[in-house]
Length: 474
Image (cartoon, rainbow, N blue to C red; front, side):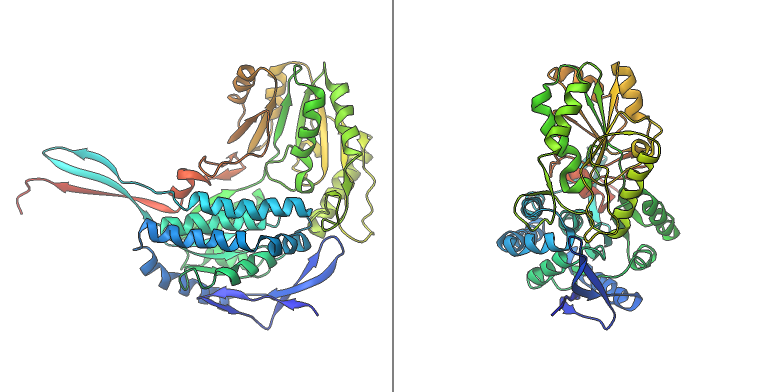
């Protein structure tokens, strides 16, 4: 029997007559149903959040920390159940699902103690002036399907720590684990402080335009981010947008081929390539290109593509049919243009499950779609370069600017290159490491604002300056 999940609104788990089917991307079978919410349910959730905000904004940092730590504990204590549920709806292998669940609990714990201290601007015989941070109000959070739990926690936690309340919308493709967490935290979060509602894509614009919501935090595509900016502009909502990326890695000629091959593989193919900060273009110096491209392709042949719930699976399915068809289209475009494949390339859109074989292309041109566009799937183009200046110019020739990586034994040279990349984050000899205490955000069309750390927390607040005139005559 298919289970029906409930939404969290005003401290209660509620269902609706209209529902959405949730599929397992490995089998394409319906595994659950969730409420299909519209304006009425959204209004109830926003009203609950606005009512809760009146008291929650007055709580102390210690009281907020206690609640957030309870959320972290609920996730960690139920991790075995949650990671299996996550695999069933998202598709990622169990090991990667475990990492996400434990990572979300760790993120909540780490960020629970963040505080925004007052800043003294002037303190003399004339005036005392200080800047304090005040919560922005009710937050509308919109979450993607690639890392549904990490992204949900990264919206819920800083909102609560800042003194805000939140209405969160999971992706209709991956709402189940989030709703299960809603059940687990229902009695530890103040009534109305966290509301989680599900709906089709049409629910997103209703959230963006709702007059009772003060801020939007969104993770997803650049195209959708632009629409959110348009909707939020009507009443000047504050926004944080973490959008697409066409992240470049640059491998210098002194890199150890055998050591970096495996790391470069997983920098692209973790979570079936469905990572905004995955390496989506890899530039390899011509001196080691042949050896390194062969080493990566050889490693790929030992990685199993399959159902994430099965032991031994390294790369799971694409999460949903729309994205599956887009990745297949990009592969077919590469075939139609006669590009060389080092491995993969044989897709079967008619088969069961959204499986794409690990596909690596050999030195396609810069104007190839697979290079110029964000693929968001298990397809990686390797490209050859001759000079560092050339590699930097090619890496920067993108409308995106989310992240990048440099691989070299000479870290000083790598840092010098990193400082010339037009991205928000650059790694040296690693990939996809995000600290709870360091800001993460994109340049150019990869985003607006920051997440993580103090900078991310400030996104949920306004600055307020209070000035006291000393020895004033009144």
